[in-house]
Image (cartoon, rainbow, N blue to C red; front, side):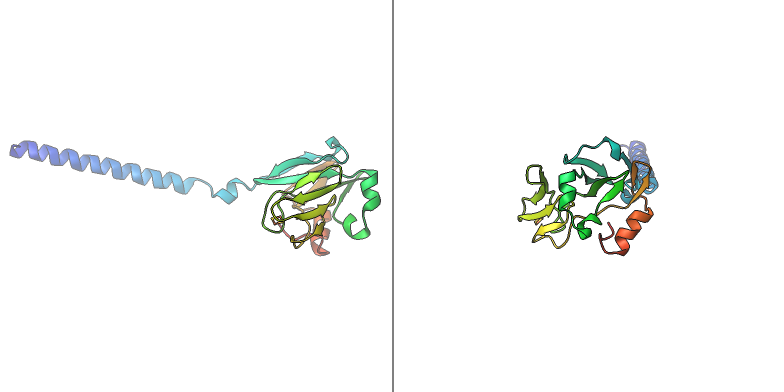
Length: 176
Ligand code: FES
């Protein structure tokens, strides 16, 4: 390699290195501009409770979590106690169970058995009734209720209304 072509080569190598460095800097800037995952997922989910059928479990999604919605039938309401009734959301005389569908033991997704009107968590055999109150250990408590605000028959998940605040205050649910 002659002296001049060696210089050319060094120049090209250096130029290439600088270009790469520039791309690296752009990449890290772009990464910094992207919102954090928690901000990205901090959305709201609005559901209309009038669309649900009695004793038919529907799974919605909020912030990446499964949300169980179960409209209670008259038969189910006959089985509730004052304590379990606190877990339900009342709209126009109808009652709805709305909760995060993740077992409070170790986070598996329980299944709903329509015939027996109860949830079973297949991971370790935990059970919940139709209000998602725990009926068989190991889950330490009922399924957690997500923050919500009522707006007519609509439920805005992720916002906090007085009905949810009351549930938090009286210990019906933990904060999700
Ligand atoms: S994760 Fe549900 S019983 Fe263990």
